Length: 497
Image (cartoon, rainbow, N blue to C red; front, side, top):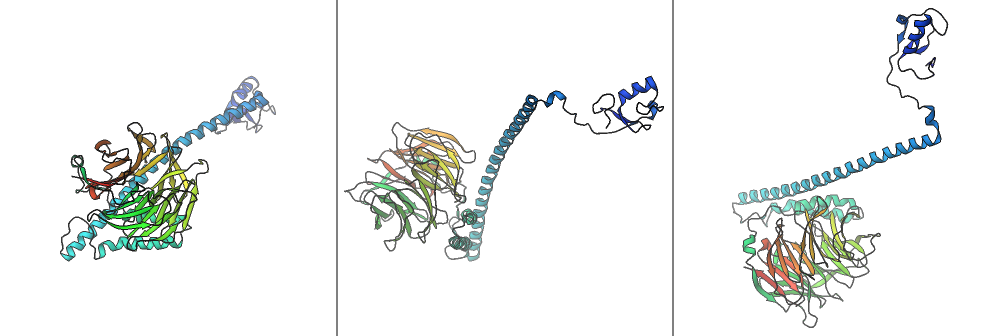
């Protein structure tokens, strides 16, 4: 390109056919008007002979003043500022997209569970029609096919996971099993209504389950498949299985060297689990009345225990700052993780219903959500001002309830990752136990007394003060037809109409 006349890139370039040179049209037209010839070779030239060149808008070169070092530094700073602003915008858009994806995944999970429940009900109905035996409710027949597909799938995945337990990616498969095995999320017709629940009174109290010389029942659980079977752990180091219907002790399991602080009843087998400050987790056979497995996952007292939805794996938390994931059948610890940035004891642990994430509470008032497959901390819920004492996930997987030594109860929305409700309890109220009923309609709180809240409204429908000591455990019977509790007064109590 010729810089004739202006020494700049032309804005409206044109070509002279006489000299084949490029000129700025404005300038060449003035020259022709005055001289009538091409400025290069002096040959005759008219405006009609000029040929326009069509070009896209060129980037004009920077003026000489912009070539100084201060000007260049300013230009670089402007470019950097623009890049940072663009990066900030992209991060905001990414966060929004992640939240939308999280909502979509939870909706997908809920849809999968509903489909699984409907499939099970259709199979049960077909079996009933084939045998011409009307069924009460929608419980799958004991004898045949209805329950087999889920059982076969569960057995397959359980075997597969044990074979390749080192590869935590198989937890994706376990999630599918959980969707099949989880109960439906619609409120059952048999569920006790809030107006009836508010009329509950104490109907039974049993004080002879544990030793009187070392008083205190510290843990409580009910068998999910038969809530009349009660499991307790005591300060006397014993684990007791009690039959509510017969009002008799079925088994007293001895082996821990310190008090028993956590107990879990297996949903389908005659097996129970317990944990203690003696650093061990024990697996007990009720029928044999002995310990069949000792899991040594921790170096300090075990503070929390939760059973995976498949019934084959245990989650535990400890004062040694680690959480562990262990195989029930072999007693082998599959993985053990700590949050190196926190550096404080874990106080409780609970699996989410989908089996792929879980929550832990810490001594420095943090609630942490973990991804089991990746073994990473994916979310934190700050807000409590004392050690976290209890956490519980709702059955639909949307909500998390937490209690701490700050006399407050907090409800968290896992879809939005935020606290949407805080219930302030009485001064010096100690929250020791939290549990949702099987339908997710009610939330029971045990501590200085017993309180039951109806979910969504979060209004109190029950308050019992029958225990003379601190309440350490609460649990709902099937369809909330009764409520059970244990306390430091060594008593197991039942409440009903």
